Length: 461
Image (cartoon, rainbow, N blue to C red):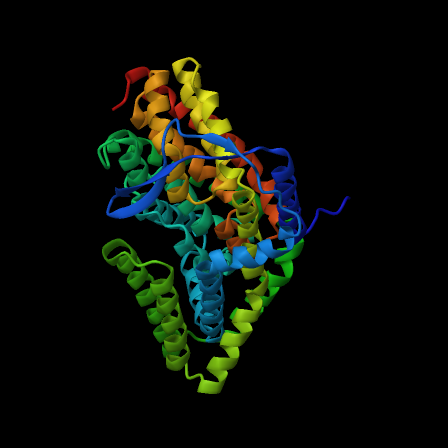
């Protein structure tokens, strides 16, 4: 079988293609003004202000792009390093393995129940406060858990990352995407929540059912998993650790209490105090150190384990930096706004349902270049609002098209630092994830087109 390129090869190839586009695509720019949305000041393009200008062809910049991508995404890169170090300390306490062993025993014969419970939890937080980067560290818990229960690492990453992703796409409160988009489109904040809850229930239930069916099949025939060879050694190592643990000790319990306190602290910090990367990094670092202390690790052992965890995350952090470099090249080449303008003009002269579908497809295509939901809202919603008026659909529908187009493909595009970083943390090759997840993306695409019909027909406000 032909060998699929490594993810670094894929991402660097995209940097080269982006640079090549700056020699072909004409430059362009929108005029921008500062607007305050939800207490945040953002630069938004002025509708009708696009003008062509000279591009800035990129050549040697393909080699500086990863460094600039690293600098732009420095917070996420540092977050990956600190979380990796902290969780390595926690893992070395043996608490996660011991706790997993206890859970496996208690769920004997009912292991499948953990999938709907955990996925609903993470999807809810994706829908309510936009859990995205915050879901990354949990794969370090759920992948070993899934392997212990007889599933594969794809099920493990789905419990948190995939669940949070579908909740993010079907959000009904998310302040980082939904509320920003509504504010920029001139729609009352959190309006239309009733139908959005219906959307969230549909996407969460269907995704959970998909994973439960897949998990049952893999548990019955493990060799059908695309990750079978990758997971076999990891599963053997996890089972070996569990067999060596003996009894569940008080130190194990204390370490897990520290982990639980960290999770609760994260939820409260994000939802009540607006914590983001810096605060969460500090929380996970403190959690790792404290778990090591209660487990009886010496200061030198703590430091050694932390460094080993950081080393394990080096590949994940570098891929995130390279992915950020793609956007740097497009922006520095002055063709980002040209791409935006070209996509925006697609939706102006279509029937209403097709116009809404075209807006969704446009957002989905643009998401490859701009994975950040809030950035994409700032760039596109001031244009989509007037386009919705011209197309005979409501601005509320345009916001939903933005949500669906922004959310689902985040989980498969190689330009998403969160996706690439999460896969690296879970030790799942991008190409394996892409092959396995692609049918689900086709399902999400069809489902999104169907979910947009009712808002168009009812002139949803």
